[in-house]
View 1 (tube, rainbow, N blue to C red):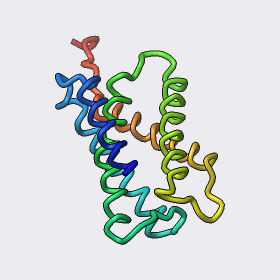
View 2: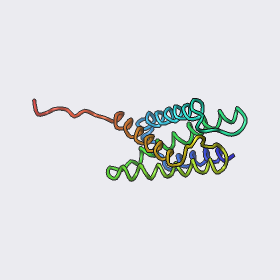
View 3: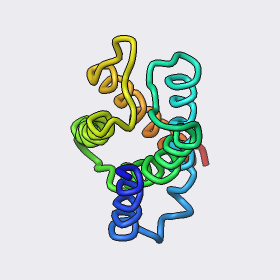
Length: 152
């Protein structure tokens, strides 16, 4: 139930704060963020068994799908949309703490558990890496080469 609530909150936040004039520009990086989360979930849940989603098989499949598509796409979209010109590191750390709180709430609600010594500290590092990757992809997608006018 809590995951449905988080999905609804993500939709409301998106409809309220998203700049819809930038969908064409921001959609690719949001989908890249979803892909990265699917890859991370595959590694963490299916391959290494470090995270365990509780419930029947349909719930174990549905919860990561729902979170990755709904929540993480909104997170990526808004992360890039509001990216400041200065203090990007502080801004990124703010997003890391927001998503750490989200993960902590999910573990508190017993939606999933972290196994084999995985801690919130390791999640902090993983989330830092995640937002760095999103930023790098954004920079790469928005790169516009400068025209060399000095030789003309």
